[in-house]
Image (cartoon, rainbow, N blue to C red; front, side):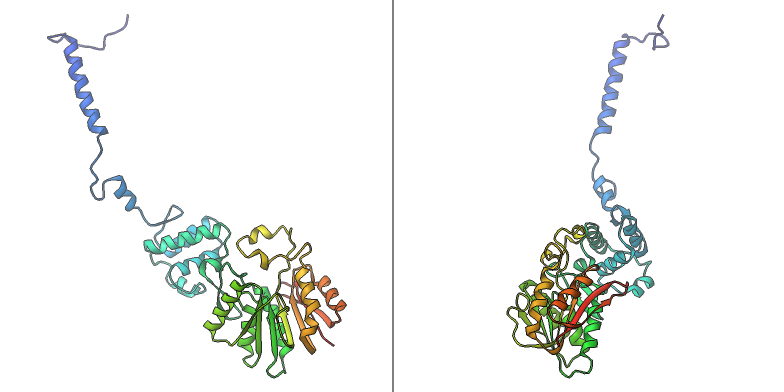
Length: 333
């Protein structure tokens, strides 16, 4: 037989009255529990959210060092994270010494938000140079953005070779084809102030970036808007170029999605623009002048053949710091 849950003597008026009172009390208590709480500072949900520590990707951040570790935890390269953090702090992206000396400093909310946004862009594949708006090349700080390719350290091999070819020449005339940010032309002009350097690009947007860099560095570069040598007058002692040289279907292109495609690809084998330059250059080179070209890691042999077929002598290639044949060139007889 089931037991009754009621113990003791039956109350006057029966169980029904007790049950009604209990039910009323229970409803009142429940209503109090469910009623909205007043938003007092520091007590409500909104206030509690605002009081949480500044965060990057949801991780609590108390110092610059912690911010860096948090970014690396989320897949940001250590060097990239350092440059992005310095940029968010308003410092030069290469000022690692300052960062080491201040790694226990706290980020304020504005700095943390800027760093978080920068890291998000980097995780999406955007180059650090586009995020910070600058890139160091041959000892110069160049402004760069999505209108131009990011200058690579490999290209300094081409600059070094160009300066070797200019040694001993007085006021040499130099032409930089496909100048982009102006990196090559500016590096040559900075190192050889007596040189007469002209920079060419088919992209008006790229020329605007290069002109701004030349103005900032106070270097007297002449600029020409031209499809390679089509609108370029005169002859030169040296023509240099870092043209597009990636094949249209190259598997590496997705990793370069943020950079201008027109400055990257050049036909089925990546050599269409180099063929055009090699064919046009002889008419614009003085006797004994040199044409120097940057190209892909596996294109040196093919470029040397193109130079030889065009009548260039002393055809040769130069290796970059990784030991890869990165540039090829030849001399007009």
